[in-house]
Image 1 (spheres, rainbow, N blue to C red):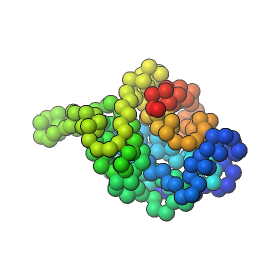
Image 2: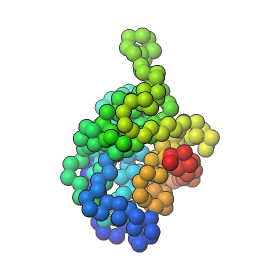
Image 3: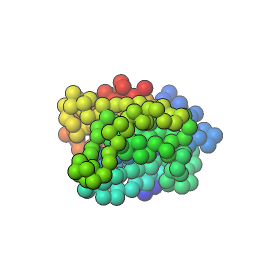
Length: 220
């Protein structure tokens, strides 16, 4: 799926929007990959990221999703590309600037897609497939250590589930991780909050705002 913005956007003329405009001027494109397993909220998180860029205005935003066996706990990934002009909807291997991993093994699996010096924000949660728990396949319980030790990348480990429980509900763990990512992208906090409102039920708005704020505290 892809979408293009129109001119204007949300709260035009703010200093934060000016920063984003300057950031993307001259052909800069941010390539973001969100990975996890079915049921973790990967698709919603990707929509919030893409909507934030679209609400800013004057940017080209492409979003593509691979759901696989998402309803059975299988791998799920989304690509978001943001810039003044974006051609292809999917990120090429080795060109991911920001990796947002909802599950540690999925983060390890996707790590080779990062550019040199790229940023990986990885949730501590481990979801062991049934076959691995039965001994029929292996699971990388040392995924976080391997992520930290391998390659030229910055790895930020976030206890998204623990923070979400402190905020009030495990269901907002995905927005905690989005909050952590938001500190690395040049968009105003109010634009992020507006994108959250577009993608969560009204009764969950305040809880998601709290989760987002908590994620920003640990994401830098």
